[in-house]
Length: 78
Image (tube, rainbow, N blue to C red; front, side, top):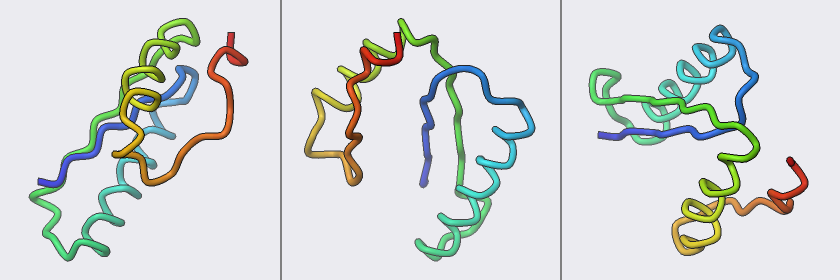
């Protein structure tokens, strides 16, 4: 603990994903005062079509868990 799961549209390079995971790990260590050994980060890529379901399940259906809410219509990605 803690674990971060990043879900996003496909298209980023492995280098970008590695940099993102490292930055998220460093932020968790700094803000939560935890040790690196307890941090895990997962990154999942989705097509625009797959994202429609992810958006509904992770964003639309769980408004109380969001700390930052998006201001776009996921259908605009299709």
